[in-house]
Image 1 (cartoon, rainbow, N blue to C red):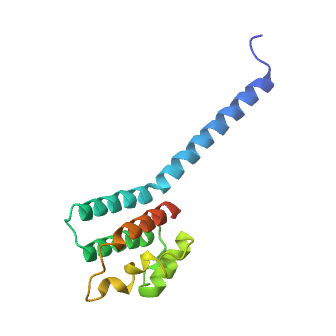
Image 2: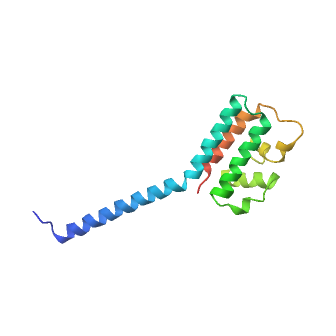
Image 3: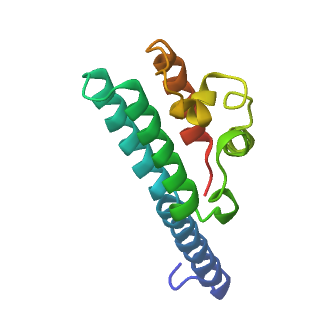
Length: 141
């Protein structure tokens, strides 16, 4: 029984190599998604601060928008999104999200609406929160 035939040694080496390659792929995927996890944590802190009345609606919108822009442009290197604003920015977010929640849904407040002289109503925040969480979970490295 011992030592095994050369074919068993080859099979054992192939299995070991496949396991090492699988572990390497998992580690690489984990590292590539780190900026997304960081952005999600930042956004949750912003939402928590808003829930504690430490931010008003406009600050909430501005900080949420900044987190998205920072994630997409700086961390994930979507340089074509960097100069976008207004409706073009919202369309780009819809394309990433695979929905129309930014152009025609609650996400439209992240466009030029956030600069309006009259602040949006606080009632938009729960819908926008769900929309932003969906987008952050839909982003791929």
